[in-house]
Image 1 (cartoon, helix red, strand yellow):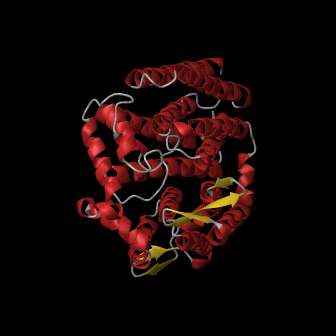
Image 2: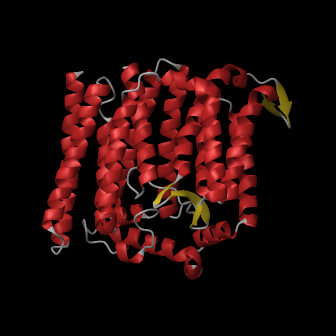
Image 3: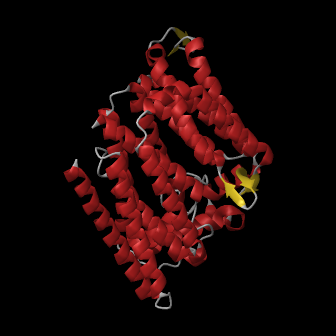
Length: 418
């Protein structure tokens, strides 16, 4: 136990050293930036790592010793990017990370995760209520109604809803797994279970998707669809569900394109940004220029031009800045961090002793994997941009706190399974 946590501490110091090197390079590229602020930032970042380490030592000493350092490294890249791209938001982002690490420590110390399986319908109901409230009382941004406000405080309910969705799916699939695996009938030649078994699952999923479409938050709808498909496939191993879901997704994407003008703008800007520069293509075009300017080795920390050329660089397009300044090798290393994180999550799922916990862990891994794939795929023009945040790296308090909460749950499950 002690050796494992010592290994975690060594990795934390390694991540801190990498980020400190980046901060020094940033200062060398921008000597006018206050050295005192950089020193304060470096000390604060180290204290965040030590806080997370101490919380895990006390609450989950047998948890996976590699997961938190991976997340800590990604968070460091995010903090440095926000400091570089939007200095006025750096302190606020740092505060959100502190709250997130504290939430992770509390979640890791919770030892009754299997009990959440009995609250699956409550989780789904709370999630739907939050989405409905956002639909009617939310604030619109970027063509989608995503935010709820309480005075001067605003948050994205969908970040909490994705946690509740994973809990619902894990609870329902662990309970009905055997019934969903065995086909009882056929529809258009496809083997399907009895409607009474698959009905509640599909109904709840359609309700979530309908409300998200009503909000015009197609990014969250795509994310929820991916989580649903991944968890259903892992739980049943039935490719029929994957095929049926793909057909529904294709139909839904076509309908969204016909119904919503901002979806048309995003698709057309993705398809040919060069002739749509004035209608959404400018972001993608500038992002591609930044990727090309980075080359293999990058321009160096603090030497990129994306901060002044790419709109929403600190949220949707933060990967463009990383790729320009770190190059193909550095951005590839960021991808490796996500890949390694998902691999450790899958390992924790395999070690879990409870079927619900296995599916819950798979859901967490699917969520992070899909988010990373979608945001990076959008930046490199592989798929249309959806407005999803890059986990632990993009600016945003709601995303950071929910992501750290999920990591805490994962580490708590890992602690019980080791």
